[in-house]
Length: 194
Image (cartoon, rainbow, N blue to C red; front, top):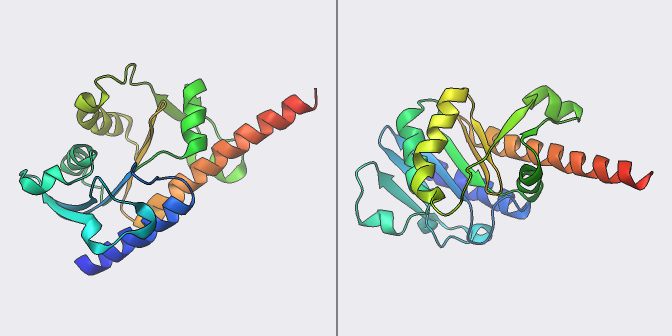
């Protein structure tokens, strides 16, 4: 079972890297194994050539492995501990979503697929980045629980998504990124007609 989980993580991470959702050293993917155990990428993982040993098996009780884990490991842990539906988690920084979040308080897709799937999505403003990593692990899972959502777009930072299915998680990010790309292009095309 765990071997299949790792294969899914490797496959999806390569696909997300090729789409520029996660980068050479930014982004994180994880999969819950048991209630207090999950796989997550190491902090120095290069996502276009992921190997089995680029993922760590972490327990909620911290040990030496946590030093090698992604900087986002605490965030993933808190989501798993507080949201039972979370089986897979991804932090990504897709360029169109992230850029759109810098100048808008919400994302309202205008394309058919984005509109049908998302409606309107609030953009969370962390206010300051200086202490974001000290606050993020609590603020992210609380936001998701309070808003009853599996998506959190953070202004200038990127997107957190959890799901029960890894492919569905990747599709959610791809669909939202495409909607933001279409919003950008429609705005640019609208300006060029003037």
